[in-house]
Length: 453
Image 1 (cartoon, rainbow, N blue to C red):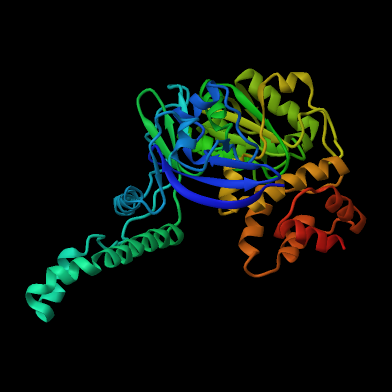
Image 2: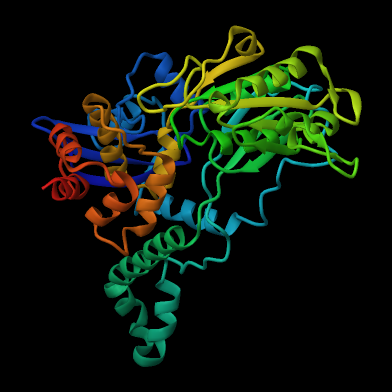
């Protein structure tokens, strides 16, 4: 298990990052490149050059914890370490430049979802909000003025003797103010979606699959997303709808076909469904837990997707709106129940043929955001997932679990947090198996061992 020896924050090519030294029998240095973003050209160049990314949040192994080490994998990179004049100036400039709020992509004036092709989805670096005032570092003029009344012509000499100490003190204030600004102001991530005629911005952290989902939907191809519970499938769908500029509609698993078709009530009035609204008015319709839905309902949905029109009770035949799109989501790939997810149905070939199928796993960048940059917690979560798979223990270590543990850590002990929010009543012998399989050290591993004892 890697043990952290030191950590230095820095900017690399103007973007926040960090360099950490670890030891595990041999010394290692990790350059945390995740803040560059998956679409950053420099990081793409690193991958193209064949440099392997370390398992810890896509960090890169570098030979030394300094600028030279970074430049060994990013030739020509501009590196500014925390505490330097350049670093402080950049933090101060960023603190005063943020203004207004990001605009949401969803708009009634947005063009048709099929009228453009999204070419890029990227996430910008976080920027602190405005309003933070930082003191000046150069105190010579102020010091001379203050001393002149007391010592007259000796003021420059006295000031020169004590000026270095005063400047160091002032620089410390700048650094502390910058740290306070970063700690007290929530970071705002922007996802920029590039279309031929415009760039749309939505707030949030982009999942690695968002670009593919947007491009498939924009081309008129419906999508089936599958993956473990809590991987953010619903949130990803909402972001896709916002990127396309269309309303978002959703249903949980469909227990009968009337949840799709709607029905005429006793007074003769047609009762609309979420599917009807999206189908007739345009929008992104998400059917969650598709693999747990009634197979008959799946056939009804399949007919609507195949024909491009549908006959609704009491309404008659309706052509699908040009901006109608569908995302189905499930925990399995559609081949029936698994050990983790019982009661799942097989999806027939005709149904799956209507969808592009994409896996949705846990995104390391999103995990780190949910954990408030607690890398130790994320390392623990990754190890728990691995150990649970080896031992056959059913534990859902989701984004939600990570976020809830992070929220409650100040109120409860680490063991209490894990018991309530991760272990959740797993049998004691299974917890012992899990703890014995987990390899690592630190507060979270100690807490798991405490629960297993």
